[in-house]
Amino acid sequence: MDVTATTSVTTTTSASGSASSQSDYQTFLKMLTTQLQYQDPTSPMDSSDFAVQLATFSGVEQQTVTNQTLAEISAKLDALGLNDLSPWVGTEVEVDGPVAVNGQPVILRPEIDASADSAVLVVRYAAGATVARQALDVTADEFYWQPVDATGAALTAGTYAVSAESYQGDTLLGTGAVRHSATVAEARNDAQGVTLVLDDGQEVAAQSVTAPRS
Image (cartoon, rainbow, N blue to C red; front, side, top):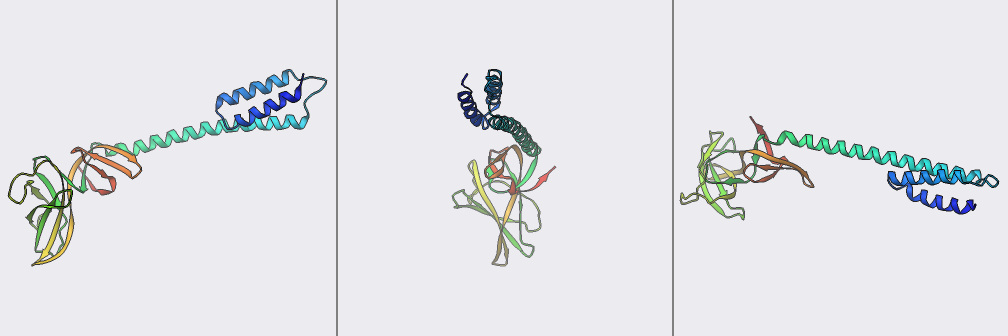
């Protein structure tokens, strides 16, 4: 029997098997066992060649175990990520961002400068054009907003940007954010981080949530 030829085939196969899956590992094991079974007793394999094959066999086995371990770790990390997202779903949150208008009143929480003696709610289309300006009570933490335009007509359904301008006399002190409440319908982890889908259909970054609400 030509032991040299068998050795060459086995070495080539085991080299590729070291980077393969469990099936390649089993194939390598069968080939090594077959080689030993049919080895010519009068011309045994050189001990150094045999040592190389055993070392390759060990490498294949270790690679297989490593792949299995990495797969288990990946599965646990995926499960951990889902566990981190699940508490968001069904939670009412305060969001600093656009407001979805659907004909119903919205409770807004404007950020007004503490030294302001007047404030104005500014409503804009997504493109930036101003839709309406409405006076705010600087002493109130919440504002019950009925979405209407400058003429008093109801705003069409859609998403609007809102902000609060703070004034002292005629001097503009600054523009603050306006928060509103919404319920989280879905949470997902994407390239931008955690994205929350609200019950009004909007998608906001988790970073825009200022506080959970009971």
